[in-house]
Structure formats: structure tokens, C-alpha cells
Length: 410
Image (cartoon, rainbow, N blue to C red; front, side, top):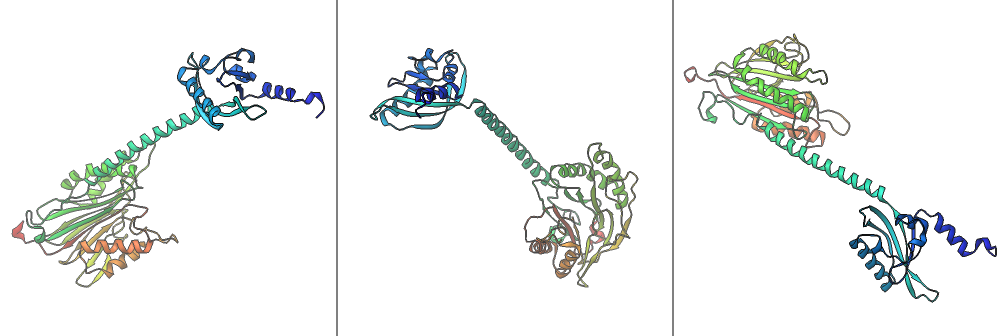
């Protein structure tokens, strides 16, 4: 260390000249007594000597300079340093920057405080990036909140698509005296869903019963249900053949669902039940078969087989054809329609509840009316999957045929 090339003055000069961070020393009045080249350039001076004797009040805006002065006077008074403080610096001419600053007390050989010294690093780019990121985060959060609010409103609107009351036969009778009672249950996997059902009076003794499931779930599927909702009322009033009903609905949906940049389809089951005769005519567009609850025999069975009634899902083929089957429903019997969300509920081993378990559960509870059967079916699926909300939407729709409606009631 006796080499004069390595004395303290030489080392300090190299440090001060080559550091990109601003280094500065101030006296007790917070006036500069020594700065490096980077600090001089930062303050708009060509040489460090031009800064000597100046204070922050000569460079920065009054409020900025006052804040710096008070911080340094506190260091002088207490001897406590400031480390890694982020602060905004604004020049008198309007320039602005952010720095990370560390300031410490400057002591003489006896330990007496004779001023302050510090190091400031330019973090403007980093701070602007953080501010920009924070701005984008706020914008994203705002958009997210607006979208969530709109989706909540859409969810409330979609609820209006489902029946809020059911037709009674004969018309105007007390619900407890109606020849047939209807019920539905709906559980969306998200705010909105792709499941939809409708029950409408189409004559003095007949009701149209529709259950459909638009591909997927969420907003896109919900838009599909809105389109179907707008179409089915008029179709139910016009078309008394379930197969023809599905054919017409298919033709209407095809140009809407099959756009160049999108692909959608829907399954559907449509039935017409005559409460006077007990005749049920039903057609299916790729939908799982309903369950017939024969309560007299205490048995359940599929209402029809795929071989009897098997048509493609809606909006797949332009010239799709559908067929109907006619069955007799006896007084006391029930009919259950459902979407695949209930039987596709899976457990931790990815094993699905399945249609067979659904039929077995319905068999176990065949004596129950729809208001008790629905909870029993959902409870069985929930216990199997060990979850209360499934990955797909669930809609159950059914009716109990209490007794034939007398002809004089029509």
C-alpha cells in the first residue's frame, strides 16, 4: 500500500469519476462541498466545480428542495441515516425524475457531524414501468369489474328465460288440482350457462316441454340459449309435432350458430304431453333420453332408446331429420328430463356419476314426486363426486301426471 498510485485521493478520484450513481457531500447548511461527475451532469452542470456552494434550492422546485433539506437536517440532528428512500425530484424548469437515495451523516476524525453525504441512483425508467404496470392493472381491474357486473346482470336476465310459473290443466284451476304438475331445477357452473328449459301451454289440454343444452358453458353458451329462447315460443305455438318442431328449430339455428369464425351446436329434447289422454309425444336432437317413473310398478326405465328416437344435435346439418315416438303415461307416473351436467359429475379418480347411476338413483327414489326427487338426485351426484358444484351446468325438468283432465274441463 506504499505505492503512491494507490493512495486514498487516487482511489476516491477514480470512484467519483467512474460511478454512474450520483455521489455528493454537503455541509451543515446542506450546501454542496463535493460531487462526482455524474451528480454534476444530473444537476445540469458541465463540471463538478460548478455545483460547489449551491444547494438543492438552486436546482429543484421549492417543495422538493425543502423536503431534501429537512431530511438532511434531521440526519445532522439525530445522526440517523436514510437508506433506499424512493423520491421524486422536480427541477425548476419542469424536468422530473425518480431516484433511490441513501443519505448518511458526514463525520470528522473525532466523530462530530460536519454535514451529510449520499448516493442517489436514477430509477426513473423502473418507476415509470411500475406506474405503467399499475395503471394497466387498474385498467384491467376496472374492465374485469365492469365485465363481472355485466355478467351478473346477464345471469339475472338469463334466469328470466326459465319458467317462473307452469301451466295448469284445466286453465285457472288451483295448482293442487291441476292434472299435471311441472318442476325444474337449474344450477350453472359459471355465472351464466348453456342450459335452458321451457314449459308452455299449447292447447286446452296440451303442454310443450323443452330442455336443451348449448355446447360448452359460460357467456358464449348463454348467448346460444338467448337465441333459442327467442325462437321457441312461436315455434311451440305453431308446430304440434315434436319432430317437425326440432327440424324447424334446427333450420333457424344453423345460420346463426355456424359462422365462419365460430362453431356451436345444441342438444334438445322436446315433448308434447296431453293431460287429458296421457299421451306423450317426444323427439330428441342428440339429447340423453328422459326417464320414465312408473310408480305403480315401482320401476324406472329410459323413456325411449336411441334406436327409436335418434336425431343429430341442432345446428350441425342443414337437412337433419328427426322422428317422434308416442307413449302412454299412466296417472301417478312421472317423466324426468335432464342435461348431461349431472351424470358427467366426476370424482377424484375422474370416474363419472354416469347415466346408469342416475337411473339407479331414480329407481331407488321412484316413489318420490319431483319436488323431492330432484334433491335426491343432486345429493347422490354430489356425494359421488364429493363436490357441490359441477364442472358443467345442470338442469332438471320433469312432470308428475296426477290424473286425467276431464273433457268437460277443456
